Image (cartoon, rainbow, N blue to C red; front, side, top):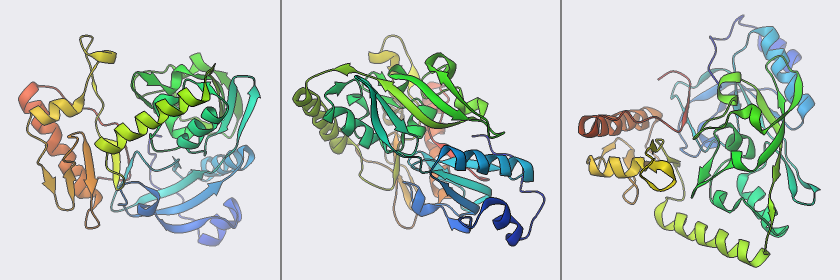
Length: 314
């Protein structure tokens, strides 16, 4: 979601609690809620577990002119060390159910890995590509998460959305204008509440075998913590498998594999992954990412684009 202006008016805490409810938190540390583990606090923080709660929260934020940011699993997010001078709403709308013989409905707050497991248990195939991708269902749809030639937009059929006026509606797949690591939600500001995914009937054992193969491959190539996974998007290239040139290959060939800044460094097994140790700051990560981008631009004349979101001022 695009960051809005600073909070205005500057209301007393008691009035903010009266407006948003007693679950409203102040100066909530954001680092522990992200996979990088860095960043300052959110001025206001609220968890919501239903569509009605989400609708009320965004309606109130609009009425009070409070900028807001929707938080999923925090796996693709870099928060400024200065924090965020607004309201962070964490989606905890959960639930998984089979609504038709081969269609699963999932709450936006469900972990994507849990959705993959549920589909496997139901002997439904089509989500194996998502095995091991961190984050929530909402975040996956927002960024059209994908791997191994598959994308979440290929299996989504419809979804319930909440707009910034608190209105709800149901939309079909075409509304999302899915593209590589992008969806309509990145520009509309609407928030996914629930989604339905149409899969195919398969063999549970075969699905589980494929899921485990993907998980093993990821474990061999990806770090297990304090990272956002691939930092940059792959480059469109029709001559490459799946139509993309891996950004990691360009970064490796450009000599970015050994770079580090403070507590942040390029992962030794994958040049498109930044890992952060306990000393790392978000500034370290941002500076390192800028160095990586410059390496590729100087070598190939290609401007890498970030996969991650940034929150706050950098």
